[in-house]
Image (cartoon, rainbow, N blue to C red; front, side, top):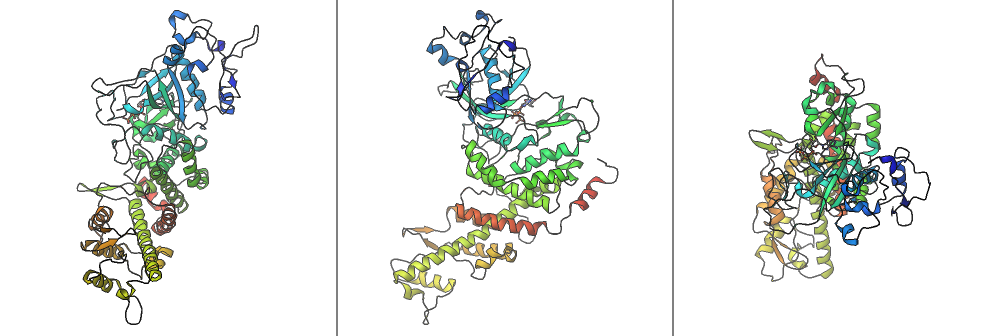
Amino acid sequence: MRFNKMAVAINPQNHGFKQFVRPPRCKIPSFSQLDYNNILESSQTSLTHSLHHVPFEFSNIQKSFSTPCLSLSTRTEEDIESNPRVEIIGGHHAPKVHALVVEVAIAMASGVKPELLASGLGGAYLFRATNGNAIAVAKPADEEPLALNNPKGFAGRMLGQPDMKRSIKIGETGVRESAAYLLDHDGFAGVPPTTLVKFSHVTFNINNSQSIPTSTYKIASLQRFMEHDYDAGDLGASGFSVASIHRVGILDIRLLNLDRHAGNILVKHGKESYAVDSAELVPIDHGLCLPESLDDPYFEWLHWPQASIPFSESEMEYICGLDPFKDADLLRNELPSIRESSIRVLVVCTILLKQAATSGLCLAQIGEMMTRKCYGGLEEWSALEKICFSAKVNIESKIKEDDQSICEEKERSVGIFQFDYEDGDGSYQEDEEADEILQGSAITAKPPKIPRFSSVRSMSTIANPSVFHYEEECDYLNNKFRSSDTLIVNDGGKEDNINDSDSQKTSAMLMSMSFGTKNYKNDGEGISFGEMSSEQWSLFLEVFEKLLLEAFEGKNCMCLSKQRLGSSCEF
Ligand SMILES: Nc1ncnc2c1ncn2[C@@H]1O[C@H](COP(=O)(O)OP(=O)(O)OP(=O)(O)O)[C@@H](O)[C@H]1O
C-alpha cells in the first residue's frame, strides 16, 4: 500500500471518522502532507476508531489479497461486525495516541497480524505497517505474566488476583502504562505515546486449557514502537547522560515504579554514533507503577553514579512545577479505573520528590528513602514507609480522640449513664478508672466506649508532629491493643471486640517493630491510603509533610555524592 493514496477525514459533528468519498479530480493530500496529529487531536475524537470508520482509498491493493473490510461498498453488517477493530478506552486526551491508533487500524485493515515478541514475560505484540516498519507494541491484559492467557508459560491466575507484586492486580497493568504516559508531562522522561485500547476480532493468544468461553475482544495497552539499538542491560551506564538518567528517575519516583530494571530502558544512539552522553534513553514497561499501597520499588539507576549528581536547574524547575493534585485529577478524569489508593500513592511520592529535591537531596538519596532494606532475610520498611506509618498512627490517634469527644458529647446530651463516669465533683475520670467502672458495672446497656489515647498527646501532636515519638505512641498502642477484654460499642450499639480485624493487624504491626533501632520489619502488607476519608487524607498529608521536613534535616546531597563518586568520576 502506498500511503499517499490514502485520505482521512474527520466528521466534526460526531467527532468520529467519516467515510470519505473522493470527488472526481479532487487533490488528495499525500500522507506526509497530512498532519496526522493535528487533524486527529484537534478533532478531539474519542470515539471508536473502527476500521469501517476509517476511510481508505486503495489503489494498489488487490481485493483478493486483503481483508473483507477493504471493500466498503460490498460489506455486510456481519462482515463489519467481525472485522478487526481497535478503539481507545482510556486516556483519550493524551497527545499523539489517536494517530497511533489510526496507524494500527490501517495496518490491520491491510491484513497485518500482530507478532508475538520473544522478550519479556508477558504477551507483547508488535504491529507493523505494510512496508514492514514497526508501529506499535500491544500488551493484552489477560496475557500479562501469571494471567490466564499468558503465552509464555506463566499463566494460571484470574484477572484481579495479585500480580507479581501484591500491590498490583493482574489485568491492571495496561491502565498503568497509559497513566505513565499521561503523567509524563511534555515528554519529560520520554515515555512513548501509550493508550488503553480495546481490540476486537484480533488474533492474540488464548490458552486452550481454559473452559471459559473466549471473548471476541481484549483490553490492551498500545504503545508507539521506538526504534532502539539496545536496552540499558546490554551496556554499562557510563555512556548515559546525567540528564537522561535523572529524567527517568524522576518519573520512577513519582510513580513508585516497582519494575525499573535495565531491560525496561531502551537505548538509542545519537546520530553522532557512540559518543558519551549521546544516547537517548526511552523508558518502557510501566505496568508495575502506581501500586495500591506503598511497596518496594526497583530502581536500576539507584547505583548508577549519575543518580548522585544534584538536580540541574531545569530539573528543579520541572519538579517544582509538578502538582500532585492536578495529576490526581488528570488520572481520575482520564482513567477512571485506576483506584483511589493508587492515585494517593502518586500524591505521596510526588510530595516526597518535591520536598526532598527542595531540601537538596539527589535522585539516589530519594530512591534510597523509598527502597526497603533486607537484613538476614528480613525486610525492613523503607524510610518513606516509616514516615507514612508514623503519620497514620498520628492521625489515627487524633481521629479516635475526636470520636471519643463526639461520644462524650452524645452522652452528655442524652444525660443517661453519666453518673457512671463522673467523680463526685462531676469531672470525667481517666481511662483506666473508667474502664474498670465499665467492666465491673452491672449496667446492661454500656455507653459507647472507644479506647483512648493519651490526652497529653492530643491536638498538640497533630499541630506539631515534632512532639510525636514512635516509641511512646507505639508502646501506648501496644498496651491498649493487647488487652483482649476491651470492648467497643459502636454507634449501632453492637459490641465489637477490639482484637479483631484492623486493630489486630495494627497491633501485630506494632509488636513486630524494634523501637530501639526503628528497624520496622515488614509483614508483607504495604501501607495504603485508600481507606481514608477525604478529611483523614488531608490531615494525613498535613502531618506527612511536616514529618518529611524533619526527616530531611541534616541531610546533604553533596556530601553523599562525593562519597559515592570518588574522585575519578566525572560527568
Ligand atoms: N515501545 C516499545 N518500543 C520498542 N520496543 C518495545 C516497546 N515496548 C516493548 N518493546 C519490546 O518488547 C519487549 C517486551 O516488552 P515489555 O518489557 O514491556 O513486556 P513485559 O512482558 O512487561 O516484560 P517484563 O518481563 O520486563 O515485565 C521489550 O523488552 C522490548 O524489547
